[in-house]
Image 1: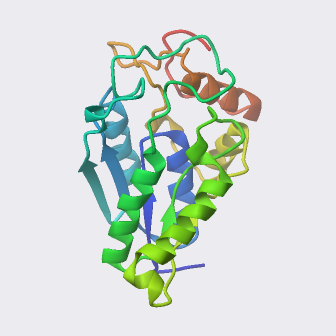
Image 2: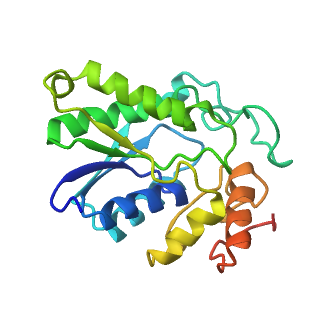
Length: 228
C-alpha cells in the first residue's frame, strides 16, 4: 500500500485509463487526474473524463488545453475519416503523432510540481490498435527520460511510470473493472460518435471495447449505433 502518496493519473475518459486510475486508488494513492483537451474530434470523452475523475475521488482534475489540431496528422485531429472496416495491420490513421510522449511529459511536469513520483497511464500492448507509444519499450524509455530531465530525478528521487494494464487483454481489463466495482458505463471509447452521442460501433476502439466485454462475459453498458 502507498497510502497518502500522490499519483498523477492520465484520465482520457476511456475504459483503460479509468481502470488504470482505479488501480492506483486501490493501491492507496491519492489521485491527481489529468486530461488533455487536444482539440480532438469530439468533446464527449472530456465529459467522460470528468465523470471518471469524480467517481474515483480525484483530489484535483485538471483539463489542460493543448491544440494538437494545429499540427494535424491524425484522423482524431483533422478531417481524415475514421476507419470503420475493422482493426487492421500496421499503425492506423487514428494514431496521434507522439501523443503519449506529450501527455506523459505534461503529467511529469505536474507530478514534479506536486511532489508526486508515480505516473499512471492506461496503455496496453495486447488488444490495441498498434500505436508505438503503448509498448513496454516506450514506457521504460520514458522513465529513463524522466530521471534525466527533472530536478527530482537528478537529485535521486526518480519517477515511476506505472502501466498496470500493459500486458492485459481488453477482456482482462473489463474483468478488472468489474472486480473493482466500476461503473464502466461512465467511460467513453468511440473515435467517431453519432450526432445523438452513441458509440458508432464500427471504429477500432468500439470494436475492441465490445470484444472485451464479450470475451469477459460482462454485460456491456455501452450504447452502440451499430453492433460491432
